[in-house]
Every structure is written in structure tokens, then in C-alpha cells.
Image (tube, rainbow, N blue to C red):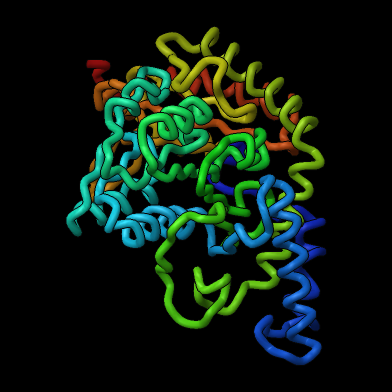
Amino acid sequence: MIYFDHSATTALDPEVLQAMTPYLTEEFGNASSVYGLGQRARQAIDQARDEVAAFYGVQAKEVIFTSGGTEGDNLALRGVAYRNRDRGQHLITSTIEHDAVLRSADGLEAEGFEVTRLPVDRHGLVDPNDLARALRKDTVLVSIMHANNEIGTIEPLAELVAVTRAHSSAYFHTDAVQSTGKIRTRVDELGVDLLSMSAHKLHGPKGAGCLIVRSGVRLEPQMLGGGHERNRRAGTENVAGIAGLAKAITIADRDMVTNAEHTTRLRDRLIDSVLDRIPHSELTGHPTRRLPHHASFLFQGVEGESLLLQLDMEGIAASSGSACTSGSLEASHVILALGYARERALGSLRLSLGKGNTEAEVELLLDRLPGMVARLRAMAPISAA
């Protein structure tokens, strides 16, 4: 199989597995236990917290370990909203956020909060001027992702944070699930108050992640129970997952420049060749402000799901923003937010590269893809209206 879906998940790095193995076998202690087995687990968590904190440029006490990006997004939005309800009930996000943010916002709205969803331009960028106009005295949180999972656009986060600081006292959260390990995500440079991430996007384990919460941020716990994570997230710690998360971050930090150069070269080859070889194809996302490993396209007259099946038959794994729901194709909310009609949005394809991909794999895809698109157009053309 040729794997071009690294934005969905990644293979566990052997070094990460090695770091996790002791805590899956002989070092199985509960980190809350006072005897040696438990205390060694506690030491592993403390060391991992220090490593994650150093990567993000924060204090160790500002790291909350979670089960992944979805939990981190939920804790950020719901935790801030509930804890700061005395200050205001207004939140701001964008129309292209991950469902973990959008559905959290929907839930809060149903419970009496007010949510403003900022539009984006054709490239998926949030305009800082739109944010400035949306901010109010009762705004308690702004949540704008660092980089988009479907189109790869990197948002002007520093500008958005600066606007927020200039016009309100609202906290700023960013979903950095896609950007962590691919580009610099130091919290002390971005200036955000909260940042969520997930380990499995950077060759770490599934079911592990963290939420960075800067000191002074008022946050209401969403999981109740014991006093874990400084009373902010109850539940027995996933010691193996936490150790794996820290190791994955350490490796990503070590190899980030090399990996970015490698994937950018392959990405640019993909983009240039696809647009040159396939008529009526279009790049989605920003042409330059995009993740180094990410290429995404629209193909006129093609269903993305059908194209994925064709690719899978050739042993190539990729993804599409469209999905089959209740027997009908649903277009990606991200592509629709860029201003495309539904029929056009259905023809999306995302190719996300990893450190293990090769030029030969890219060339094989480029050899097969034009013919697949041509066949699908001939078999079941879709209106481009």
C-alpha cells in the first residue's frame, strides 16, 4: 500500500513503541499509588510533561494530558465557557474548524451561549478585520485552528491573537492537531492561551494528546472524578500513551526541518503535476501558506468517494472531504465554506505526505491519477454548476 493520508493518522514510530513498551508490560503501575511501581509511573508522566512543555515553550504545570484532539477541543471550549459565564456568554470560531470545535460550539449555543462563526476567503483564511468586528465586551473565547485538516491552510494566528488582545479580554484557543510536528507551534511565540493536539498525527499512539492551558486561564473541568491533572481532568493516567506522546514530540522536534524539506518537495511535485496533467483541476487552500506535507484538489465532474475507491484498488490510500451519509453524498463543510457549489465540492481529494513517502510513490500516483479522473468523468459525470 502507498499511504498518502498522514493527516488522518500515522504509523507508530518504532522509537515511540519502544518508549511505551515498559508501561504496557512490567511497569504497569497506577501513577497515583504510593509504592515504587506506582511512583515509577508518576516519574514517567512527570518526565513526559517536562518534554511536552519544553516543546511548546510553556511551564510543565500548563500541560493537561487528554485522550486526543477531540477531548482537548471540548475541554477548551466548554471548560472556558462554563467557568467564565459570569464574564460573558459569547464565543467566536470559524466556519472551517474541525467538528470537535464546531459541535462543541453548537452544543454551547443550544445551552444559551452565543456563537459567532467567522467566514473565510477562497483560500480558507480568516480575516483579522472580521475578527475585530466580531469581538465584544462579553466575548470569553476565540477558537481558530492553526492549520486546516482538509485544505492545509495555515491561519495568520499571530495577527488574530494580536487583534483579540487589542479589542477584548477573551482567551484564545487554537486546534493545533494538524500543525504540531509539521511547523513551529511554540505557544510562547503564537501567544495563544490554550492549544490542543493529538499524538497519532505525528507517529504517536492513538488515544493520547494534550491541552496546553496557560497559567491564569479559568477552566471548568469536564471529566469529574479524582484529582488527576491538577484537578482539571479526572481519570487514571494513560502512562504508556503519555510516554509515547512525549517521545513522538521529541522525534518530531528533532526531525522537523528535514521532514518538512522532504515533504515540501514531494508536495510541490504533486501540486504542479496534477494541475498540469488533469484538466479542470484546482488546488484548494492557500498556494503558499499551507502545511508542508499537504496537497488538496477539486476535480470537476468527479465524486471524491468514487475516486478514493479507484485509488484503493490500485493500493493507494488517500482521503476526500465528501462522505456518504444516509445513501447520499455530503460535501465537506470546509470546501463549501470556501464558496464552492455543492457539486464542485464533492470532487475533493486530499493527499497528505509523510516522512516515509518516496518520489517513486508520487510518480506512480501521477501516472495513475489522470486516467482515473478521465474514466470517472466519462462514466458518471457530475454537473460543475
